[in-house]
Length: 182
Image (cartoon, rainbow, N blue to C red; front, side, top):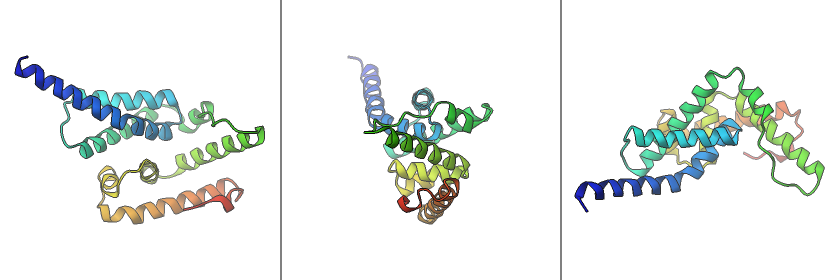
């Protein structure tokens, strides 16, 4: 086999391994940002297409950060041309997991909708901080995405969590106050 083919095969295997490892996390991140499974899948796939198309190189942590930054930008761009983010989320909410009874299912649906509304009302940086942390990103990776020092992420994250909790309590009329954790 010629040397060029081996290099191409190795690159394909590296991309496949990166895809297999990172796509589920990237998809969940996009789903949390959009609330739409099809759109989340499209955005996550488009981020990988751009990675390959633009021949982005680097260590896995840098590629992971790049993918999430591109996905964030794609979502942001998508919503810039859409009339109203909130309306889209209310039209096509993510179906809740099966519940034992109708009351529990309805309560979960209402809670998910309330969380989405509150997230949508937060400043973009707070939303990105909270969603990336929920996906298990390190402070260094979050810092790179929001362009701050890693040592600032903990403070910024605590403030974002506090703003989220306050906004959630306010939006739900303190209905869930006893269940909130930070």
